[in-house]
Image (cartoon, rainbow, N blue to C red):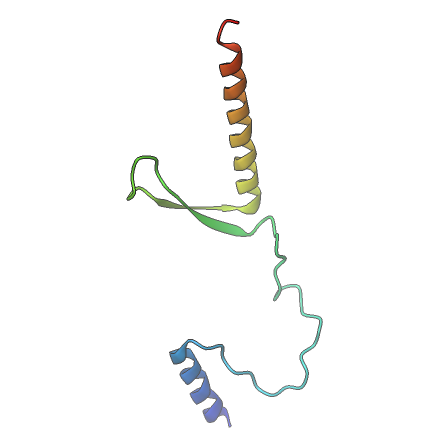
Length: 93
């Protein structure tokens, strides 16, 4: 039986399918915390592709945690607002 399972596993991998599972009875509804990650885990590393302005070839991959991405987004927003405020008051009206 193990040999047949191994053959099925190799065939599934070759076809890009999910591996078959051994018959172990009904799956338990509760899983261990180590096997399931929270959908919005703040420590999960997320990689994004950032493109350079003025170049189609200048894209690079940047990886940070969700917390770092949120902080970077906040800093970018604050910088944009600061620039817009300075621009509005600098006209000498």
